[in-house]
Length: 52
Image (tube, rainbow, N blue to C red; front, top):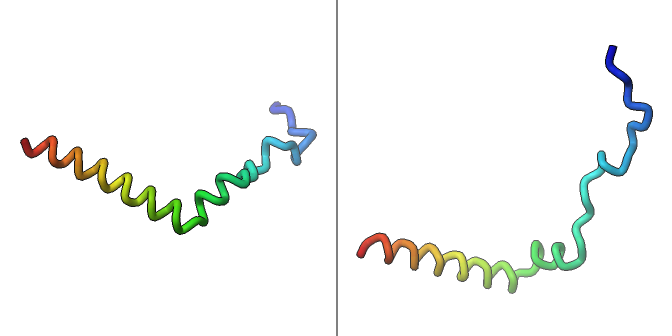
């Protein structure tokens, strides 16, 4: 017989709350625009390497 959980509302059951910095990175247009170009440049670099 399995033991029942006596504390169903422990902290481990709740998702972590994002920090102020994480919320900024998720919502800032400037940060997203910067990351978009960084990732695109990495992909372009990878493609150029593979075609040589």
